[in-house]
Image (tube, rainbow, N blue to C red; front, side, top):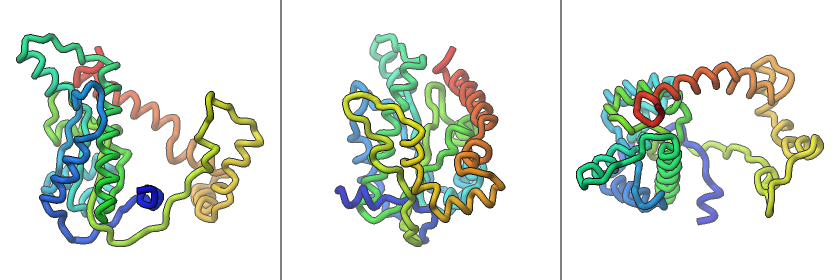
Length: 247
């Protein structure tokens, strides 16, 4: 298992080989065994294999090719709709139309998604998370016909890898692990922790291509700018209000 986890990489190109429906169901069953808040399983997984629906979803994911190419696209949704309906049908008053409940269901949704990914990789499948789901959650809601109290959180493409790309770099363990209490960073430790990344030829190419002075500027000015973050934050907050999680 440790070897499997340490070999993870995002797969963005897939073969034409379909995923057997029995195998897919086994993977989904494994995902649904994931730990969750109060055993409410307040999440839903929308399985998309239909090419027409994948074509509709593609623009919401900035037309990344794997959205269409992958044999299966999974949209993992925070979902308090089902549980609330059960409560109402059993003479119980649900109180899950609030931000705390949204956070709980979001955490559970992502836990289920990661369990699915590990299970998929264990049988030779490749996966890729699409970080665009919350950017265009409203559009995805319309395409997948999600009711109130259901919000898409993340999307995963899955299939048999067409190639095996190099692993993406990771920061040294000491960058993310803190023992007993949080230990803040000094300028010198920041330099040390990001030295290998900044010395990478790949990232040096990013700096040149984007006409920036530092790699950090590529992130703040181009890839994840404040302007875009604020725009998509506002857009997602409107979705949460429309779907009933915020007043």
